[in-house]
Image (cartoon, rainbow, N blue to C red; front, side, top):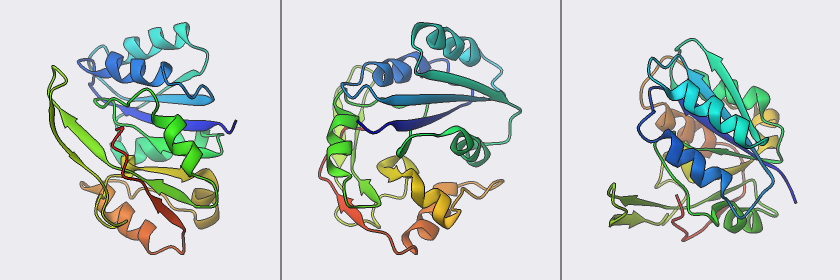
Length: 187
């Protein structure tokens, strides 16, 4: 089994972080490196992350001064040692078969793009969005990447801007990469 490095930037996410971590550690796909990066939170996010790390050896916790989402994702890429890379926001959750489903589809492509579900706090489905084409969903969280493409093309998130996912996606789409679209909404 190939390892997946899951990068989770954290900033004042104590309300949802435990649920996010729970959805990661309970994945049916077990070969995960879970990288939790606290970006200078002022709430209890860091202690939630550190507590989770004592419960699961796959979790690595890093702290840094607040520099924003792009810098935190880039920081996580420095520690990612998996064949694949995935970005998960600290207030999001994944279906428990998420990585099992994606890794099976990742052979012979540079990345797999998938959809998402939006739910209420009580898990009532509001809507879901499947990718119709690779340009539709700009969130960096909507793809499972081969780590080698980050190294080969030196692609990173531009720091110090908002809507960083849009610029990242445009830069990413301009690369000569093979993509597989999945009508799967496990995020």
